[in-house]
Image (cartoon, rainbow, N blue to C red; front, side, top):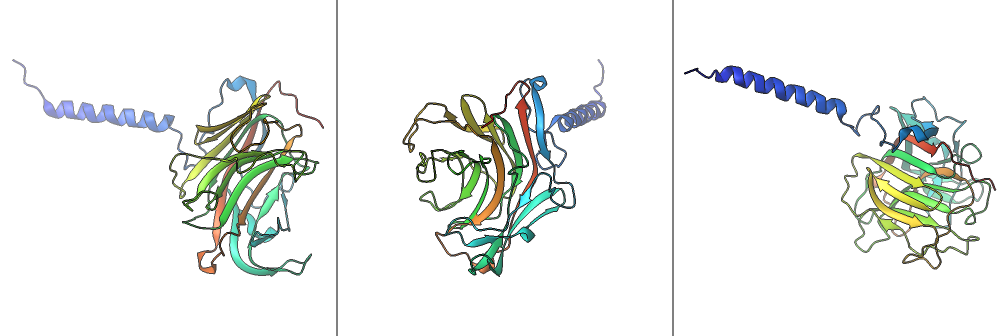
Length: 297
């Protein structure tokens, strides 16, 4: 009868486990690493990368983005200034801070400043896959911070070109006053003809706002689809009327340019002690099917 060498068996098991662990690490997609793979494309040979910014440069690339000095609407509590947009550690940073500043064009004093940049007249797209890896600003219950990544029609008035909210985070639009992520599409003939009436869809899953997350938006000839961390949670189809819309969906007929900003909503007064807050964008990538014909209007 042979004597079982348990020590040798244990060593073998440890080696097998170690090899398995190394294999898993090599094949995992770690979302907390800068060099992680983007969400896999179906039939990769049919796709091409048409826009990319990894934000590795020391400054925001002026060939891709324009920083804005502006306001937006009459009720937001912040002024957008260029100084609150910068790159750091391979991220685009949008800083929102207590920084009393007078808006030169109106003489109005704003207690808070933040950042807005966009790709208008520099990059736009029609159809394809948009993907961004983002760490959202710290927030809490009944917090007026309002970060967003969205698109509107390039070279055309709002709302004729459509507005695609790839994500917005807001604590005012749901009764619990908790921060929720929304995907929304607005369209109409002009600013007073908005067919979306609170029609945004809340991302239904719990999400750790202290982590980076991948926001994805797919657009083809017949529909839009919204994803967070590759989890699909919203679809808008051409010609379909949804709850809280007053007309069937009409997809954009103008190419879209990208907007990144963080606002302070007006439903509660922002508190100096809660700021500064930061939104970090690790990368933005836009893909398109190789046979796609860009909309030209």
